[in-house]
Amino acid sequence: MKAASSPPRLSREASRLQTRTHLLAAAKRLFVERGFGATSLRDIASEAGYTQGAFYSNFASKEELFVELMRERSTTQVTDIARALSDPSASAEDILNALEIWAQTLDAEPEWSVLGVEFKLQGRRSPVFAAASEELLNAHRDGLAWCITQIFARMKKVPPESPAVLAASFMGLSQGLALQRTLLAEAPIGRMIMMFLRGLLAAAPPVR
Image (cartoon, one colour):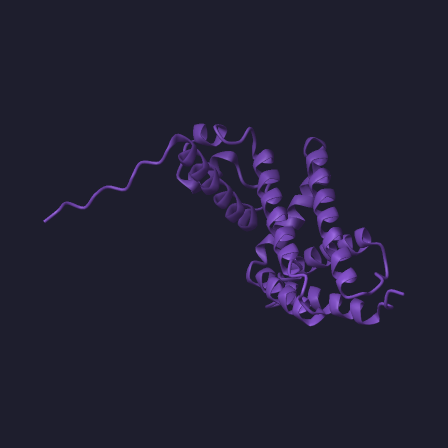
């Protein structure tokens, strides 16, 4: 009988990426549960099963980790919306149905909206953090604005406001609903965003 072979050892780079992924996941859990200010760098390392040295091998600070966590989320969200728009032959209803599927991921992971609130508040509290926070939030707004521009163009409708203003409004709606989860048993963030989007599209005049 052959002995079970041991799994292949990870390369140094693969190991570093795995550690980084685990640290980000641990920070996400703790920031949601305790808040950014109440979570220490040591807490994150311990939650992920690493030493503080492993933390510093991947991130210079807790603030840098938070920015990277939210940057990855922003990239994923904008990419997912763009994917829903990627089929040039899709009908208007096909696009909306694809966006409905995307919106379900927001309802499945409401903690991201909670983190969005925490991220924005930390930017207001800390001058050191403010620049990085504002840069990322502006980039996220611009990414969403591009998606909104594409959605209205594909529907052959005129946006009622600038796409940047609409993007900021949807970001505020998401964060506001996240805060309501402390009062309500369920705040369906994705569903409400799609309800408002469909309403805006229905009321928007056609492109002439």
